[in-house]
Image (cartoon, rainbow, N blue to C red; front, side, top):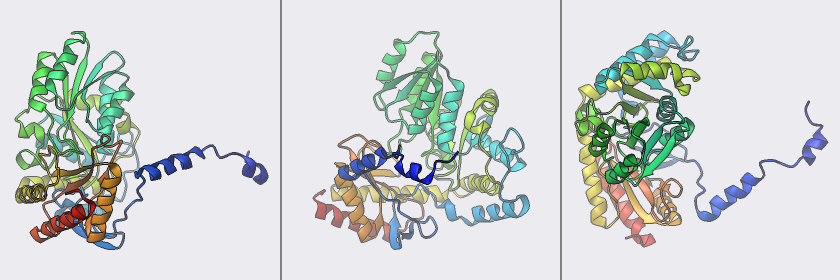
Length: 402
């Protein structure tokens, strides 16, 4: 029964503490309003009614507006409707979903693949499904939040090793019971620093200690390896990684995540991965455009070539200006400034000058390592990147960063 209006007005707001928490975020310089994209997700676009060079998108190859993806999405909508109407295990598996999974398995050179609603769901759902209370997870300290959440949900023992330190991971493994089921997991490309996981050494450990090996290749899909097959391909590790996670919403330009591996792994996830079991499947247009994206990766290698040409130009430009770009080995290039308030000020100053590059602070990155995170794409032009570098020079000088 609803409360009488007078009693409702007298009732203390149980969420009042959130206002205090929000004020703390404001005081610490962490509170940010959502920027609104006014146009298509492009290299040069409009955000909050301001024309800007976009350096914060994961749209590495520009596929969000690729003609082939547009047409495939429209065709699927015209012939199959706007939604699937159900979860995959009841009435929501359409032929286009199965086509996509077969294509992804072929692309990743595995027996099978399964598509999830997001990369987050793929990581969290898989780790939680394949491990339990008696098992152990050996995880890089900078792994993505979805890996961390999946590990917690699994109730397995979690052992964290220092970033990219395979020797430390070995010491962890030596202390665990030989008969215990163990999973080693690492990002392929780390999303905040842009460096690569120590995958060859971790694969060696997985084989020596009889562990499951899992790689989250979200930021490597479409970026590293032949035709964008990811870091597993980049390092020549096919057949040595048991669980490969990728995304369909970054370089592939659409939406979703996937897991590629053995037929038994995928069949098990069909039955036990909770995000797969309890979420409505992708609309036909999403699945169809994801299929088109993989085909573009295979048929248009020039996109990746342009991405890396732009990446090398922009990285060298930032370094020449004196910015600290950390250990980045990918198109993700952090401009590390230290304190969160300074990172936010640099981001705001850049936006005023016509460059959109978001500031990132604690807890996403460690205290004292706040940065403006940049990502160039294949569709940035050389004049656009030169303009962005000029803006970084001016804003960095004004704030005393360089």
